[in-house]
Every structure is written in structure tokens, then in C-alpha cells.
Image (cartoon, rainbow, N blue to C red; front, side, top):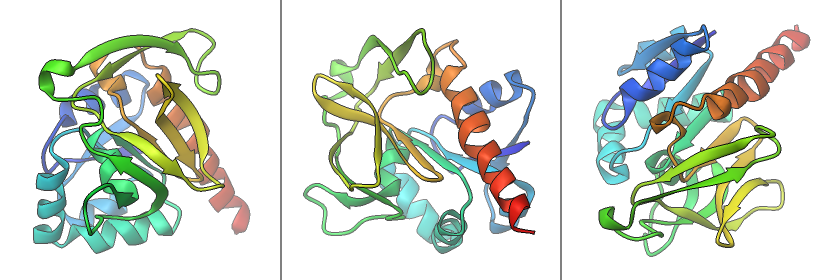
Length: 199
């Protein structure tokens, strides 16, 4: 499968390496035409404010929103979670607004408060997964049709709503491919199968 990574700012290369490690093709998405080459897209960590501005400047915001609303699988990590959220605490506007969650920016603190932990996320893997948090957000509120995949210290750090996946942490900064495999095999693959069954 062809998995796109939004390549405006942030941790692009790390995601591409994990995609290719699983035998799929990673494609940098920089212009609207790139959406026609991909089966799914990842919104990497970085600065959500910067990425949001670049999405507007490049005209990619509406195109990306339409693709996601049309069923394209998407995974937002860290800043990507903020971009996907319908509501951002203490901010009067959102970005893509395609996931029924309310998020808090830098919820775990500043850069010096970055940390790692390990958790078993049953829907993803039977083994412990290393979770890397860097100026991470978390979910304050989630809609009734949002599946909560993982919590840390009582805070929601991974969730799924249909074709939309969001994580506060950075699986791409570890050697564990479990989360990337989950996204591609469970979300992207099932989406493609569903689309084929329509025809």
C-alpha cells in the first residue's frame, strides 16, 4: 500500500522508515496532487500551529479534510492529534476538526517534561509498547463513538474514530513497529476492503 506522510514540517522521515520497514511505500505529501497517489495519510508530530498555518497557505487544509471525511484513513501523532481534533482547549478555532475529541496542548508539560513509559495496548499488541511523550497533548473529552485505546495516568493518549487514529505519543521514535502495523493492517486495509465491497 501507499502510505502518505504530510511533509510540511515535523517528524516525516521517521514515519517513512517505519512504513517501508513493513514493506509498504511511503510517500511525502506536499501538494494536493499527492493525495491521488496514496491510500492513507499520517500527520506527524511537530508544531501544530506551524503545520496548521502551512496547510492554509498551501491550500491543503480543505483537500485533506475532504479526503478524511470521504473515508481516507488518517493517523495523527502528537501535533497531528491537535490538527484532527474538533475542539482545542483555550483556542477559539480548530484545524481539520474531523475527530470528535477535545484536546489540551502541551498537557504533560514542556520539552524538559518529556518522558517514556510502557503499556500494553490490547487492540494493538499483546506485548508492552514503549510510549514516547514530547510536549504531548492528551484528550480531555471524547464523543460516544470514539474508541479509547490507551490512557496514561488517567488521561486519554490514544483513540480511534472510524478511519481516524490519534496518539499523543510518538511510536515512530521507537524500534517497535506495532502501532504502524496496527494502523496499516487494521485501519488502512479494512478501509480498502470496505471500499472494494461497495463496487
